[in-house]
Image 1 (cartoon, rainbow, N blue to C red):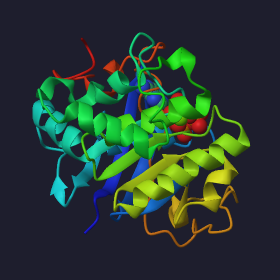
Image 2: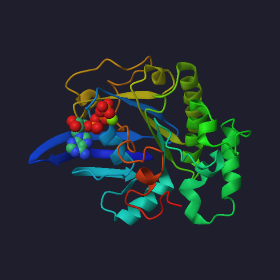
Image 3: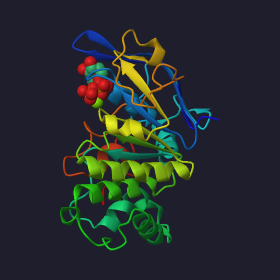
Image 4: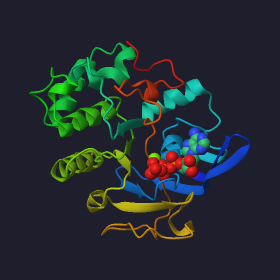
Length: 272
Ligand SMILES: Nc1ncnc2c1ncn2[C@@H]1O[C@H](COP(=O)(O)OP(=O)(O)OP(=O)(O)O)[C@@H](O)[C@H]1O
Ligand SMILES: [Mg+2]
């Protein structure tokens, strides 16, 4: 069963009396352990889709399912709970809190649980990411690739079923980008799905499947092709699709508080 799925999802934005339809009927499903990239031109709806998949916004029509359960009708509080249980987020700009150590940043999404195993889990994740000797470093004492590894560790702290990544290699050089993509592959080997919105062709060397989003349509439904699928490019035969980038980009604080991600309409966010 798909871990995350959209069924005929439509998203309209109303601004100044105008209606803009950003997504025009998206059917997209991701299986456990799958690594899927979503590509498409600027304005094609990638961020919008990622926000819907991450339960950071509601569709105008259609359904979003997590583990087969339709979550569109749930209250904000219930959606928050479902999101926390199922989804991790990784962003282009890392969004680490500057005043906290690597270990503390990883613990943020679980801070309010008062779980005595939290610190141990945080250390385990950072060790898995090759950062066992950087536990107490603050973000300004870490390289870009190390920061992104901290962000990946943070995305995994609540043992999600799917990680949604927004341009995860966008701020990294090529070699560091490869290392991060290998970390994602390792994540999928533990049966966690990864959905990455990207402009980076490098990503397509690592994914199981690429879907294209063009003008609010996905894959075969798209009226035109961007031709951006990589060697595994399955854009044309993908059965589904998409995840928007930047779920947090518009919402998270520039210094990387977790506010926009976990607690946009939530009482368990990154405030401490
Ligand atoms: N909050 C909003 N209110 C009104 N219109 C919006 C809003 N968010 C996005 N849009 C519009 O919806 C369309 C899709 O935007 P979206 O941000 O999903 O594109 P994108 O594919 O992520 O682009 P990029 O690659 O530039 O990040 C665009 O035309 C955009 O202007
Ligand atoms: Mg975007």
